[in-house]
Length: 246
Ligand code: BJW
Ligand code: ZN
Figure (tube, rainbow, N blue to C red):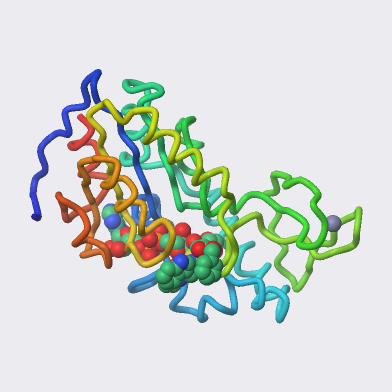
């Protein structure tokens, strides 16, 4: 069902809200999405830029790609969609959880705290070889430079999750724990700005439905998994999230 304009979700003290966001939520901050016109995967196939094999084959190319994106993300500012989610968290407290696929850091910069970044952080670096901890890093490694780990000399890499890599199991457990904890509440699942093309995030709607959640999608275009949602609102998240979460 497409609803324009959407009604408010009526966040009251019986409601628990699980939110999943994707690149569309940052589009109004000027950051490109992945798929679609102008999308990041339009310049080069994603296997070359966002997979362990692509990185092994041409690490300098991959670092150039991520360095440019670091610079763009640092220049961007959170928008009304990010801020509406911060406000919802302020009202719901522990009955709120934000799971983002975005690596740009804008939710955290907007003030979201109950936040799980399931695809990692663009502004983080870790070693591709040893288990050395991730460090915050805003450096742009542009001119064919591939940084090395000073402990094991392995190649450093951006702290994001590439295709074929496992998500942190602790993140998926935290989502389960949230749904379990609030099973007696009025449970809502809201996805925004995501094409529903990438798993396991695209299947979270099914996980939430099995736990009895009412499911809502806000997206500019029909998402691949739109049929799995009970309510679909077509439009921009910067406009629709403030209305839904009012
Ligand atoms: C707006 C808007 C506005 C625009 N307002 N809306 C089951 C079936 C088939 C395959 C698999 C499966 N399980 C796992 C896989 C393999 C794979 C996968 O999903 N492949 C698919 C391509 C089919 N998944 C994985 O490999 C994951 N790992 C895993 O599952 O491990 C176990 C395993 C491994 C191998 C095999 C089987 C199991 C890892 C996925 C990691 C994804 N990483 C990336 C890159 C991060 C680093 C980087 O940034 O470079 O994450 S890919 C990219 O896609 C990024 C995003 O987070 C992710 C999702 O994209 P998102 O956010 O949805 O963006 P878009 O561009 O697709 O959509 C934006 C939407 O917004 C559009 O619809 C617009 O209309 C809309 N929009 N403006 C509202 N203003
Ligand atoms: Zn190392």
